[in-house]
Image (cartoon, rainbow, N blue to C red; front, side, top):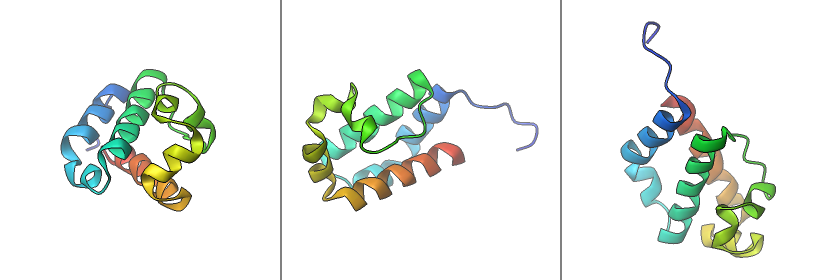
Length: 94
C-alpha cells in the first residue's frame, strides 16, 4: 500500500461504482442515481464535502427534484445523511 500510486478522483469514483454493488443495492433506483451523481460531482469537481442540503440544490443532483423530494427518496434526512457518510468512507477506502 505504501508504494502503490495514488488514485485520481475519477479512479476512486469508478472503483466505488464497480466494487460497491452491495452498498448501492440498499437503495431504490432513484436514490442510487443520486448517489452516482454525487460520485460524478466528486470525480469532476473534487467536491467531497457534501454539505446537506446545499449539494442537493446544484446540478446534477437538483435534477432529481427539490430537497424534500430527494430526502424522501432515501426515506428521510437521517437515511440520506448516513448514505452520504458511507459513500464518503467508501471513496477514502478505495
